[in-house]
Amino acid sequence: MTPKAKRAPTASSAVLFGEELRHARKAAGFTQEELGKLLHCDRTVITRTEGGRRKPSVEEVEEYGRLLNTGDLLMRLYTRVDWDGSIAHPDWFQEYVDLEAIAIAQRVYQNSVMYGLLQCWQYMRALFASGDSAGKPERIEELTRARLSRQTRWFDGDGPLLIVILDESAIRTVIGGPTVMRCQMEHLLRVAQLPNVVIHVAPFAKRRTLIDAGMVLLELPDEERWTYSESLDLGHLSSDPATVAKRQRRYDRLRSECLSESDSLRLIAETLEGFRDEEQQARRSRLAEEQLQRHQRRGLRRSGPRIPSRRRPSA
Image (tube, rainbow, N blue to C red; front, top):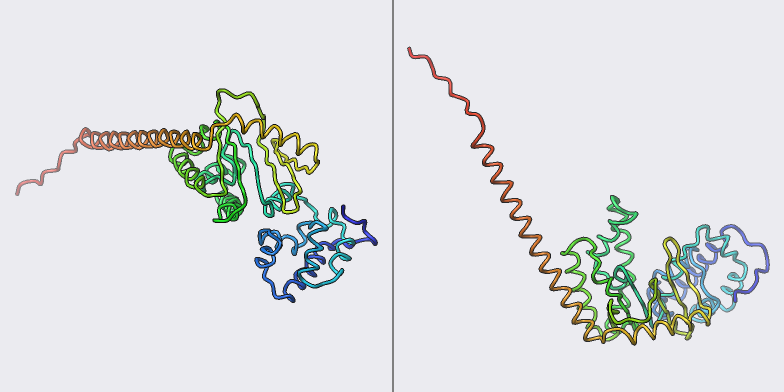
């Protein structure tokens, strides 16, 4: 638990803490990326902390002090920060992303649409374009880059364990059309070959355990466990042991009812072939439509009224 503040903070106390952390890091000769690797987290976690936009844990501050040789300076500053008052707009999803960036294992159940860490860039753009960012290409690009950056450590050759149960609806629901879905299924089959990635499909039929919303179970380096889920406009993050244990039991029951890993990939491959067929059919339909339009345009030119040429008067 965070120690109680010893004196009233200033409005920019989180920023001052971040500046002191940045100064100590540079004095120790570390880049943000190098320090992140020592802490088993992404560079963006360090960036947000140094910018006063993220509250680190007590254990993390202790690690900063040890690695940067600052004694108890950072901890004394940390206890004087009113973190909720300094960070004007706490981002519930960013808190989850910060935990995800240091997790050593992630177990996921996802329904309706593809899980974010398994999405290809074509699918991401189509998904964002169909939501609140429709008609905002710069925002769509920004969101796509952010999501792709989260994938990096999981798709590394020696990445953390990622076990994903996909409800069959996630591979059947069409986002962006057959071409996008074909790219997405090909992407799934590629990442499933990584040694740290396991994908199961929970089929529509023969299932007793029902989970009505997607959920994530995170395991951190210190054996701390968190669970995360989303409602329509809000994320729910909890480290309560009873809540985590309850969701872990439901997840384990559902996994026992899923298709095996090999059968899941076989179903994904069959779904891929279906989208390829739809893509080819759509392409043939477009070609036929284009040929019809060209034929109609030529017909209009031939059937148009003839304007007689004016004869020059004879001399």
